[in-house]
Image (cartoon, rainbow, N blue to C red; front, side, top):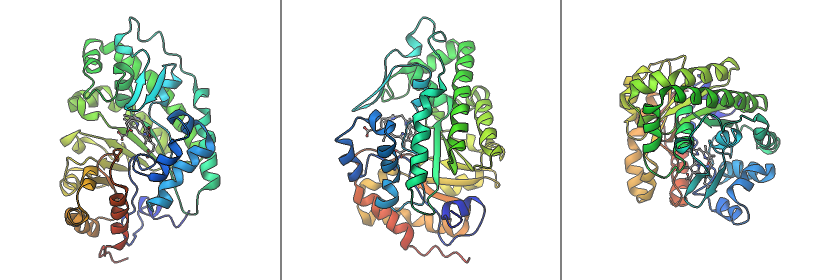
Length: 345
Ligand code: CP3
């Protein structure tokens, strides 16, 4: 593992190119994933260690990325809190979303043992992974997880009933945040005990609240989570998508690396984010719909950035979407490895 280019970068060592992996790399664009999916439901894939481990490692072989990310979902936490959850063609669906319940707090019963199968998956990945392949553990940040719990349907844009609930019922919201955070921390401790090498916290919908409200209500939980991860010397990457100029307020004690969304130019982010924090990102996944000539043209600025910034992990500014051309994802990987990054190491 000493020779993992991702871990080297995270340790602050110089490398001849930036390490790279892709958010949502383990499904969606991979033909081999779609083949496996013909035989199982999403839940079955997640819960069967041999299948989940195989899917986790697919992008190592099929996209030559520098790290694997656990094949699971952020919504395993609401499930372990007792919420009925299903994954259908269009995305996750909750049986009885909290915003529409009489007593949202009453129906939640944290059961950490409902997460045990994920530790079996981690053990299997670690047993079968190729050399120098770090495993990234992850979970959803309290805001994003709570929005799904309150609203139910994830694809319903901007979670209107969930946001309304947060404003109408601040006290219940705070209690819900604590319930989600407590179980999340137990879950992260489990992931680390089973050997994840790096940890990423996804706050995909952080941009749906004004940043000052986000800071007041949700940052204390993010800080609690960051502390638990960093105390174990596991590098901590934070992805608060859509917070705009809020990135200036993220402190070195909040994360080791900050994952930048595709809205914010990386050069600008570098000027705004505290210099002790490394950056990850931020290629627009939709660029992969373009021709390879156009893709290469739009990637040019990243070469200059990568030349001047060793503390950078190349990644997307959000995850792959289903249906993006696999050939273009491969083209991107090959490009990273082919380019002369002009680094003196
Ligand atoms: O690289 C990976 O795919 C690793 C595992 C992973 C999944 N979900 C598997 C998954 C990760 C890191 C996630 C995170 C996740 N899940 C987030 C945060 C990150 C982000 O990209 O926004 C969110 C908001 C979810 C909730 C979720 N799960 C949605 C909205 C959907 C449906 C839309 C979609 O992205 O496909 C899912 C289903 C899901 N999670 C799939 C996979 C592989 C698709 C299942 C299928 O193939 O049918």
